[in-house]
Length: 174
Image (tube, rainbow, N blue to C red; front, side, top):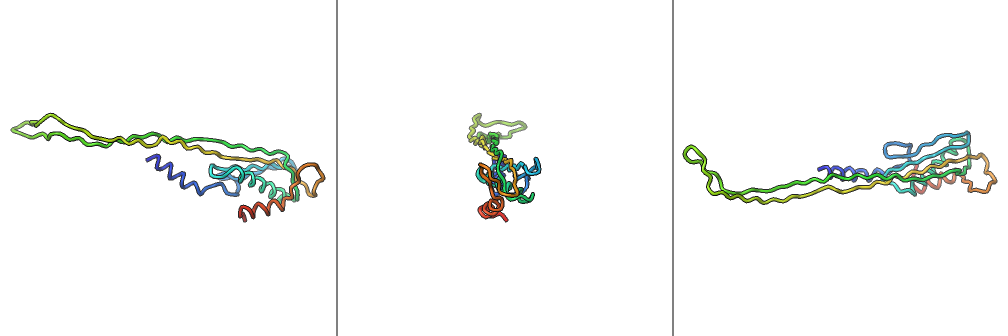
């Protein structure tokens, strides 16, 4: 019975991949201002989202934070990715069903007389459970530095408006 409940829960969660939203029960983004022009953005996914999408969502949130704070461009000064892994093993259960047949006692005179002395048993034991489910939850963080004008530096400078528009279109985010 427990195995069935776990499977139903897993099937019900398949449609619960982490969406693009503030951090909640199924994951999401969070951000923090480090300095006036430096921010840390984190996106944590659940077991139903791929690491590539988590990276893209972190990138999208980096662009949004840049724009929300009055900047147009950003560079990534630190990027980290991780995956946490956890497992759940269902318990093993055994159910035995069987039947017994033999002679029926017969009541005689004031006592019980057993006719014959043999009995037979037949049964079957079914085992269930014992499956292990492994869950991998990706997360990515970017530390970004923002600029009002495009800096002339020897690193990749991202245009926040273009990043935002392209990723929202690619993932159909309003």
